[in-house]
Length: 260
Ligand SMILES: Cc1ncc(COP(=O)(O)O)c(C=O)c1O
Image 1 (tube, rainbow, N blue to C red):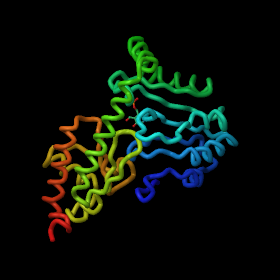
Image 2 (cartoon, protein in one colour; image 1 turned 120 degrees about the vertical axis):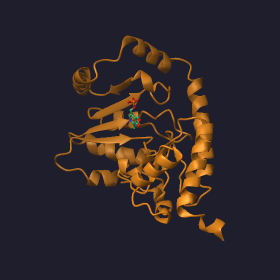
Image 3 (cartoon, helix red, strand yellow; image 1 turned 30 degrees about the horizontal axis):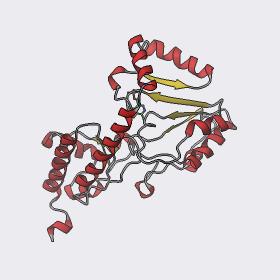
Image 4 (tube, rainbow, N blue to C red; image 1 turned 135 degrees about the vertical axis):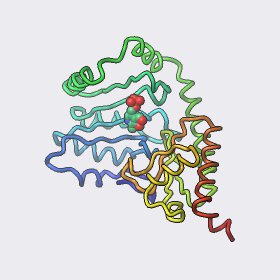
């Protein structure tokens, strides 16, 4: 479990403490959905070293890897190659950096045996990635990358604006994510003041009354939080935040500072 107190940092010792003799794999997602946090290279090294000395796979979901806002060291594949090449499985996707969600194309890089097993499941579960999609994704990966940079800049502006709009009410506590495109505010104060017992109730009432859709934190084992995606237009984000703040103030009253 991560905490907003240290920016939802992933700590290797918390993960390794949970390992039992039955553990077959560890999954790390960085940048993380829903918090946008990155694992530090140091913490990642500890986990990779641990897996490298055992028969435990280290599955690393890097689907938001191209959406990191500031230049920080985050070369996880290099660490895998160095410390646990036989246990490493990297997962990527065209959905996020290239906005190709509907094309349904992802990939796995790992030991041949593991990739063959993935193929066996994939071919019976969802069939195959069609040839047109494969060509399009090769073009996305090998083509000019300026649109990715332009979109990252746009996401950064959306993140900063959304942060400002939401924190206009101090009972919506946000951290600026380091990557991906989700804000994960702590709304526990707004819930308490508004008489909500769960973030599911909060999200349902927000949807019913204001037509704003958010994902309740319970979906991520984090009651008291909601996840908001900013992979939508600036206008939608501005109007959605306005309605969210209006909803909180209608249910919970004006924030203390404004009420004085
Ligand atoms: C962490 C993470 N991994 C993987 C995916 C899967 O993306 P897709 O199935 O579109 O490739 C998502 C989508 O939201 C995600 O957040």
